[in-house]
Amino acid sequence: MAFRMTSQQTLNHCIRNMLSDASVTAQVLPQCPEIRLWLVEPQAMRRPFSQQEILSIQNYPAYWAFCWASGQILAREILANPHWVKDKKVMDFGAGSGVVAIACVMAGAREVIACDIDPDALLACQANAELNNVSYRLHPDLFAFDEPLDVLIAADVLYDRANLPLLDHFRQKATDVLVADSRVKNFDFPPYRAIGRHESFTVPDLDELDEFRWVNLYRT
Image (cartoon, rainbow, N blue to C red):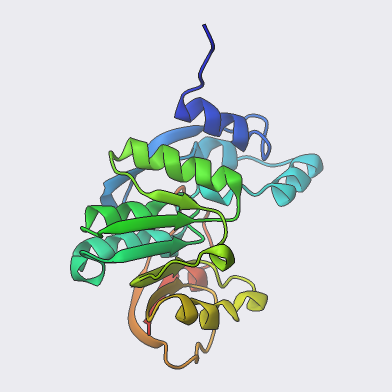
């Protein structure tokens, strides 16, 4: 009989490309306790790393194994404001763990697409959907997606200023765009407007600089 790995085993296999002793566990989000995610076990990140391990982390950062501050806040705010997505077709761009996509399903979206270019992130999106008893579609490439959308949502995708042109591309895909970001200073990209500012943190907490613990929400 063929052996089929569980979701946890599959993600453990992936995350060991980052650290050989890393593993994932199902963790509740402190600011969004309705959602659980397969995330890196914190202890693996709380020790000194060798030079080789630092290079390994840089080569394979496994960002899908963390719930970043912007994703946690955006998921919480969607659940608190379900009218943003209820009965709408929504894409979670740069989905990572799928936390925002999960929140959109829970909030009553008609259809949800979790989009990420990283195949391992799509595996995490699928595993986390199963963990939360929800379902959504997976897609690997925003630029190849040619279906109409009601809402496009993006969290923590502007960490590199080279990604700023995405803001214009989002508007070509959907008239209603919701962005969460903790990195860009002096955000001035009309017609995006600020709709909120919230303090948060990464799960597991990476003790990031205070300036990165404030998440700003913008909407067209």
